[in-house]
Amino acid sequence: MKRKRKRTMPGVAAGGRERWIQRKRVLPGRMEFLMQHDTLTGLYNRGKMFAETRRMIDAHRDTRFVLLRFDIDRFRLYNSVYGEEEGDKLLIFLAEIIRKHAERFEMCTYGRIIADTFCICQPFDPDILDEQIKDLREYLNEYQKDYLLEPTVGAYVVTEPDLSVEEMYVRAFIGSKKCKHLYASCLGFYDEGEKEREAEETAIMNDMRRAMEQEQFIIFFQPKFALSTDKDFGAEALVRWNHPKAGLIPPGKFIPVFEKIGFIVQLDYYVAEHVCRIIGKWRRDGKNLNPVTINLSRVTLLDPELVEVLRKLTEKYHVPVSLLNLEITESAYASDPEQIMAAIHALRRAGFVTMMDDFGSGYSSLNMLKDIDVDVLKVDMNFLSGGMEAEKGKIILSSVIQMAGRLGIQVIVEGVETQEQRDFLSTVGCDYVQGYYYAKPMPQEEYERRYIYRTAE
Image (cartoon, rainbow, N blue to C red; front, side, top):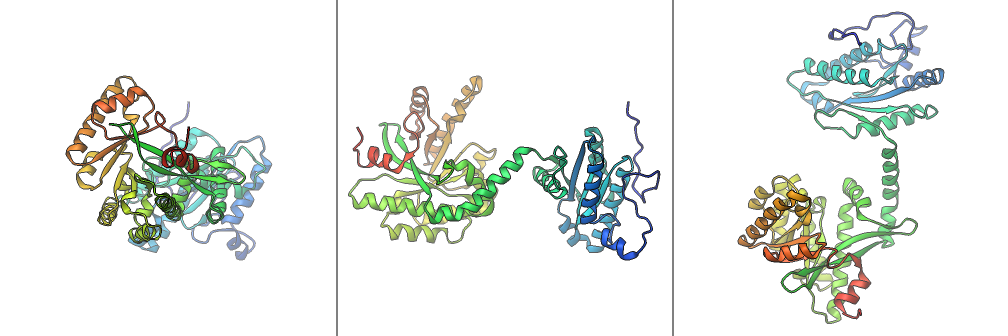
């Protein structure tokens, strides 16, 4: 049974019997101390912290350690609000908390890495770690009641003791990304999958510009169908990455990376140009065409040059704007409602048909529909999944379709996979459908053969 500790505000850490803990002590020369310690807090600096941690782990191979990396959310803002002197006082306060926590261990190293970033290596005990995190948050709340001070802690349980301490620190940092700026979730553990994902992202970023230059990004088309006739009515253009070594990479692998680093704008414009070029070719061949839809990311919608870029592309390839529809996600609107609304208005004024994808996936859909001005809603068949919930889904989906009709907004339901779903949608007045029941996404050549030139058997 654990003895309950009385929690007190930290002061200067007391000494004690010899331990693997850091303590400020007299050194042969002031210069040596300054080379190994942080001048503000007296803790080890980065180099000394990593060196002592290396020695500690090597000397105690039978002990399972955890390396922690933590900082304070919005510390720069705290400095701006209260001044650098108050920021320094907060860092000294944090150093005393660390010293206080370290005293319970026979073996522990700790230091200040840079700014508000600290590092600790200690034996791994989940209960003690949870208690430390709880104490840290309570201390910070007591320290400054007028400003929310929240720590972000990344943890790497040392399963590979032969790794460099620098690599262990990087792994703890990766763990911290899971909870940055998430209230009530301030501890994130590194797992092996994180490293693999980091490596995948790095490979994607290394290859993406070359891929665009070499036109490795290719267009697939998924047809849409008018439910009243079951005849095809245009298509959605979907991008795939035909990597020379990895093969066909699905968008779920690279789109999130591109969105994170801003490269998604270049990809969106790449797709827009290729689709305009393809439509232009079909028109030169004398084909009667229905619209093709392209997807625009939130970042692209915020580009002030968007309307002009699309206008120039349609002019360059002699494509009427009525043949190029634009699809955005509900989540894009939710993240920047005023700016996204302004972008949609500008696109509609230029003559483009706009669609709201994933309608109903968020919690503010009805309120959003009152404010936003789109031509088409796109709803997923997920509304109709799961037993009793499916019955509720039918009622909701039916209501959305009827409400949209009264507002003069057409509805496309995607993800249609069965005859039963198709028949239900027909009874509730759905306009258009898309899904595997009708056709999967297909390469350009197949789409042209089946739906443009009609040469397929």
